[in-house]
Image (spheres, rainbow, N blue to C red):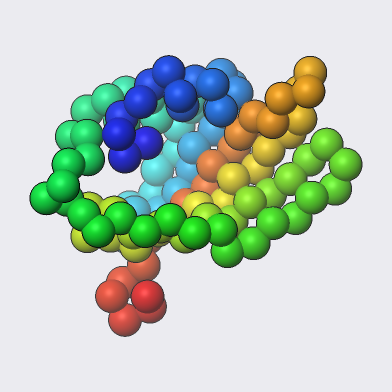
Length: 107
């Protein structure tokens, strides 16, 4: 997402995935195409935007479904993402992304 790589996002997300979250107090709910449009409208990462942090906070795996919790820091904002995934025809695909931002005191 940080590098605005549409091809890679289309590879890992299911085309009917939903993206729902809270950016501060602002609720956002949309489909995958809206998410792609948003990503394409953001500037790609460069050395001046760093540091970026990404880490897996948790994983629940049951058969062919999983929920991965990812913490990340980018563009001066700390996020938590919950990625719901399903194994479809042997490939893991993100079917829902829910996210929230954190205030500096919550980090």
